[in-house]
Image (tube, rainbow, N blue to C red):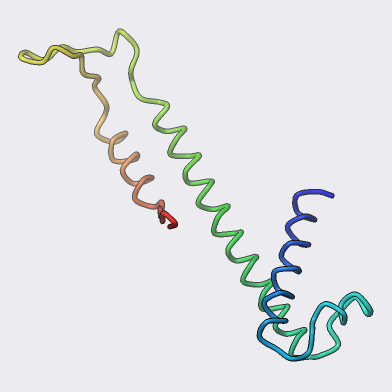
Length: 118
């Protein structure tokens, strides 16, 4: 099985576990017998569950793309020896960056939503 197949199976199991906890009619036996849910309510609940899952995955993928772009941009910092500058009173070298580059990095980082789970 591919990762997507594993995810789809896990998603269906999660849905059925949730549905079975909240409804008298059990979801699992219906799908195994027919390949779809006989109850229109159950089928609609499954479709909504899938839509929510797809939305979350799309949002996650967009966030991953933005983070990858930010990491790539940060990797372009002028940090070679010939970019070093010494400032009086500071014992460490500093590196110059163009204002446009700094604004670009700040713009990229502002678009990333980081939510730390508990």
